[in-house]
Every structure is written in structure tokens, then in C-alpha cells.
Amino acid sequence: MVSATDGGESVGRPFASGETVFVRFTVTGARSAKADDDSDPRVRLRYSITLTDATGLRLAKPAAGEVVAELAPEDKQWRPKVHAELELPSGLIRGEAKLAIELEDQVANTKAARTVEVRLAGPAIPMDAPFGAKDFGFYRQEDAPQPVLTPAYRAGDTVWARFTIVGFARSDGNRYDIAYGLEVFNAAGASMFRQEVAAEQAGESSYPRRYLPSVLSLQLGKDLAPGAYRIQLLLHDRVSGSRTSSDHRFTVE
Image (cartoon, rainbow, N blue to C red; front, side, top):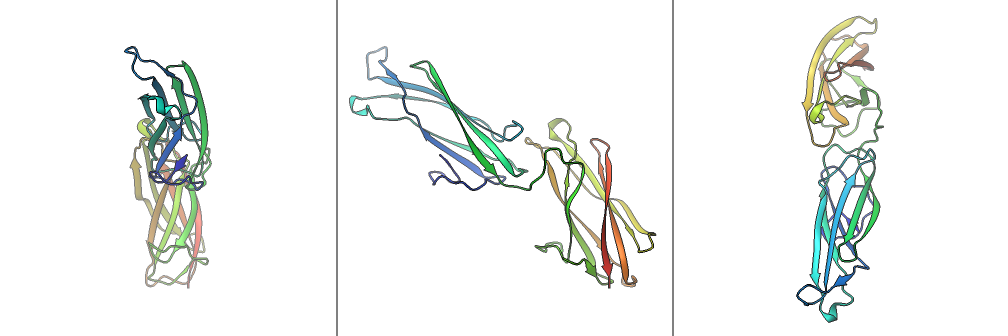
């Protein structure tokens, strides 16, 4: 059984970054044998539990252990129970993970295995996504919950934008290093402002990051003429050396 709380009910919902996957199961068919000192029969099991993503990368530190128990005559129907906790990393993407359980009965010298699918929550990002900005949206404020349907501002306003950087390279230690900037053009296509590096995102993690939520802002001049404008988002992957750009339009009323 897989649950989101210790001792909780089995869940079918996806697990999100940072959550703990609680695993528990009962072992049936374990054989017992007399101990060397002729005491009560003894059950001896070894188990390992691993959780991997769709590419086979481990999502959590594997759980492993041993179950050893002496059985009194009244314990003939006793079944060993195993509990484990697997802590998920940050940066998960939507998909299916594989929970693999391996058992070894050291008395019977037999092995058994079972796999269970665990759904993961997160943004839907293909493993082969090209380097670029995904889900670019204009906002009224930095913390606004939803993007504006029509990106129209007034002179003197602050233009906020949020987007997700995907498809970047990683070096040893899953290290990433991204810089992004912007260039602003008027309706005639003339450049009005350019900032090669407006922000940077760099770091490393035990589990590879596949997306980076990002934000930028542009302060409009109070005397800016009404009309159509264009932001060109400039992305630089410093690990691979790749560069890319994308255009995003707004108006000043």
C-alpha cells in the first residue's frame, strides 16, 4: 500500500515535490525454520524498496532492511509487515514513477519482486524539450495568480512576466547555469532598451532539475507613447553555451 501519511489510506492522487511516500505491505508465504539452539521457529527476510522516474533515475534513497522474528506455536498465522518512507526531491515533472519491491526469504532461499506505479505531480515537460521559455505570461503584479488575457499597460506601469525555462544542459553534480535578459522594441521595430543579463539562475541538486520558474519586470517610462511594443526574451545556457530568444507583445494605452 502506498499512502501520503504514516498509517494513512492508500491514495491514487499524484505525489508532489518534497512529499513523503509511505509504503507498507504484508509478506505472505514466508517459511520458518528451527533455530540452531532448538528455540522457536524463526522467519528471516530481507527487503529492498526503490523508487525511480520514467528514465530510471532514483527519486529517493532506497529503503532496505531485514525482518527476523521467532514464532511461538500460536503465531502460525502471523505475517511479517514492512514499513518504509521515501522522501521525494524537488523539481519533479508530471509522469509515472516505478516503486520496486524485492524480497528474499533467507530460510527458503527464494526471491520475489513486485512493482507498483506511483503518479507524480508537476509541470508537463517532455524529457527532450528544446532549450527555451515555456508558458510565458504577462501579469499585473509580481504575485498575481493568473496572467492577463490582454497584455495592455499604461505609461509608468511595471510590466511583470513569468515563464519557465526548460531544455537546459546540466554538468557534473546536475549543475545548471542560466542567464536571461531582454530587449524592448517599439512598433517600428526599433530597439528601445536592452539588458543582456537581467537575472541568473545557477545551482546543483541530487536529482536533476528540468525546469526553472523565472520572472522578469520592465518599468515603463511615464512619457512612453501609446502603441504596440515587443519584449524579446534572451536566454543563455552557460553550461552548453546555447542561446535562444522568443518574442512577446504588449501594448501601452
